[in-house]
Length: 191
Ligand code: AP5
Ligand code: MG
Image 1 (cartoon, rainbow, N blue to C red):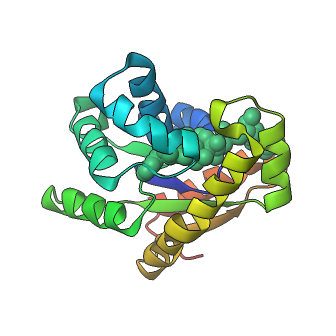
Image 2 (image 1 turned 90 degrees about the vertical axis):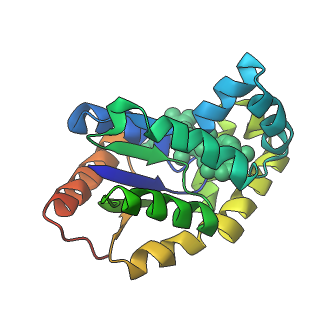
């Protein structure tokens, strides 16, 4: 299965993907994790990305698209993948669709994790990642609302979007995520 998780910072994309990999046995591709690894390794891409990440802004499409394409070309993605944090802009989504179409593939479904802002802030304050500083976190939320939220309409129009309530325990949310993937398997999505 080829599934995308979309949600604001702190929505639980990584948490749910960790559970989903066990269920679906496909790799978890988190662009945030890929970028943090590149920053730690001091690669040219990491150096280019670090300033934007520290500011809570998106890194350039060209940079992230190159990284994702290389990762999708690896053999373990042939049977499917879970994309967490990608695509995040309309150009990224269009490039992904083109890439898959050229290989006679497509995204099976998109899961939106909907979580209100006060809960996102509460989760961020309980964590200690470098970009979890309150001012940076506000910018990450603004990037989501301005650049990523339009993707919900993009995938909604394709009939691929399942909107899931991201409040509750991680286990509660996982049962909703699981039902959405079962609907994707049956070829039905809708909202
Ligand atoms: P990225 O790493 O993707 O960060 P993010 O989208 O801001 O999301 P988070 O990882 O903070 O949250 P999450 O939804 O994964 O939630 P999690 O499961 O961790 O991106 C970082 C940066 O990289 C971006 O700002 C940008 O600069 C750059 N970038 C990445 N992709 C890019 C792209 N495609 N284009 C351009 N730039 C890109 O949970 C959060 C916390 O809440 C955890 O502590 C968790 O334990 C807790 N939690 C989870 N579920 C629950 C629950 N149900 N109840 C209570 N707590 C919970
Ligand atoms: Mg994450």
